[in-house]
Length: 117
Length: 408
Picture 1 (tube, rainbow over the protein chains, first blue to last red):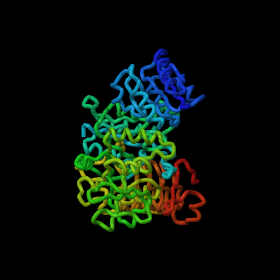
Picture 2 (cartoon, chains in turn brown, purple):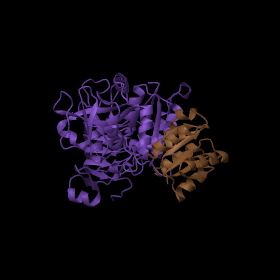
Picture 3 (tube, rainbow over the protein chains, first blue to last red):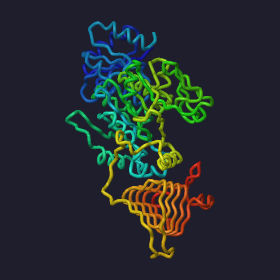
Picture 4 (cartoon, one colour):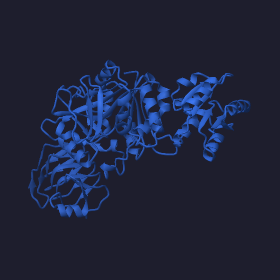
């Protein structure tokens, strides 16, 4: 079973994604900050990370850069309510960029693509 | 050029130029008497009207920072011009630069802030005179994503470099590091293109490729070794045939990568008509110079055991502040404040700031680092075994006398 880490400071979004992705057969961990996400990655590395950008403290871009810097090789999907970050070079290290939506089909499609399912 | 940002990479350790790099980064090593190596690249920028320059520094950068602050603070920030030294920020990594490509990756935020259309990537350890506008025009004409400057060298010498193979349209098809059988330039079977370490990238292509490189755990994170060879397969990568600025026939380019290359490039300046013309007023090489008195070359009139000595200076570069008194200086480059005392002989030598050759001393095929004092009567470069016991000697037999050594 593939392990997905969902990182978002809004707990209800984490829960929403968790139940949705678990229904699809994934094992889902959640983290509410960039720092918490890095702790999960060190302790129990996931197969893929769904990462919010705007979070208090360490934001998603910083978390992404730190993950690349640590040579983790874990695919990252940036998942944000905002489209303007897509043009920002500092987000280009992500493997996919998905705008948040109540329809999670795009997100799931990118997850399947990156997990080569 | 306004949409082109220049990034000058000056973060190498310069180990092969040790001990000249013991106290300073390679780009800030003295060259040609009054210059620093980096002055050639920066002068090319200035003469090409490139006035937005980041200098990525890393090791032993104090001297380079100071040189750029004192000599190159000539850009007008109000007009959007600048030259800024950027040490590693380690924003989200706990390490130094892993290679040239990593130095750009770690500074992606600068590219995001500036958002240029193109990035001109240079290194601070080459001696050449180049108009980057010609390369830029070529880059745009070819609708290239990356253009690499290539210099034509005799095919017989090309095996020491990264050799570029290209088609008749100058699109790069192969890239080989130190190949045994170098490919030739289209239409010129006796010459090869070698990479000059000068790149123009379309910014988005650069960003995508340095990110991909940063994620690759099995590479050296180097443009020449990793990024460019990979891009040849998937991007429009071209080679621009280097021609010297203001000299249609000129192809002078030297990588000051080793002590031998450093010595030889200095010696090149001593010829009757040097290939690298420092005296072209249309392509001036700028540097920072302290206030120094004029060079003084005088005869010694008998107040020494040697009696009257007229001395002579021939085929040499003598900087301000030097005093040559009744001595012979031949085919040598003297930086400021060098003293050559009566009865001494200096030949095929590079003498850096403040070096002093004592009375009756003889030195030949040697580099004296800053402030080295050669005692009276001492000889260097005349007895290989003796020299080897005291100093390091380059593969081509140049004796290097490091700073701080006591010869008395």
